[in-house]
Image (cartoon, rainbow, N blue to C red):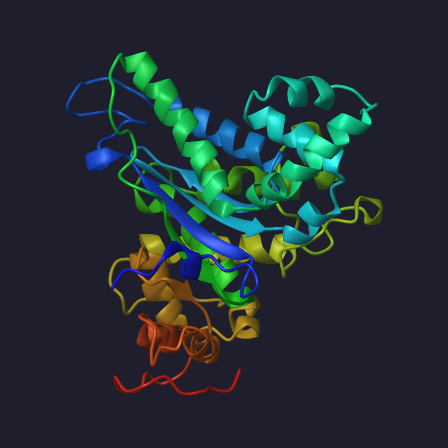
Length: 346
């Protein structure tokens, strides 16, 4: 049974989500379309630019992304605490960047001085706007609608561009987050578009690699107006980021490189040597992780340690959640039978 959207996205449970949007009928509307013979690859840059633009407006941070020829993946973080810190005037300024109205609000947002009448009117709206600016659904709506309208206008057509609403998967812990990031950034390699993840122009892996080669990576990223969540120790203390990826950048890039060899290795029994230390630290099974990276795209609503799945199921008054056996394999736990979820040691 399909889970309601309000249950799938619960920031109080986890702020991290893996999201996917596919073009209608999986046509290559952002690549070389075999049906029309046209090359729409430049639209991948549309999606990439819009993604970063919205991250600068919403309280939504980007952990990883990859824009493909007929779909895109993102690993996003909902930063509700940052949204709560915005004063009402800042909420208004950000909102009018998205929607041109009402006129009085657009005018007031451009000024530093607000009349008492304007402040009273804003007070009636600011709670709603603040909530929407930290909503993953509104973020994806503003992303997908703008791309669809732009592409339809260019093609002089009407109708759907995306195949329904976006899909989301909750990432319950650090291991799930880093695994999903690696899976997303390896999509271009898995599709045969590039040999290495950092070679893809339309993915976060390229920006990560550039940061690793720069003596001041955070400043470089700021100059380019990118919105990637930094890794531990990657940024200067004065920037005080609201969150960081729970790993060092070079450690993650080594992890990503090792994972990329899994994708290229034929046969599920072969695993490259020199296991990265991060795999042990995260408590991930070599075979389970290899299966996830190679196959991926599993239709589970959540990814995380089975003990977290138990907590989540109890919150939803359910006996089990889909994906329990796979998560047990991924986290070096022997899969149990199909009985109810039970607590497991972290």
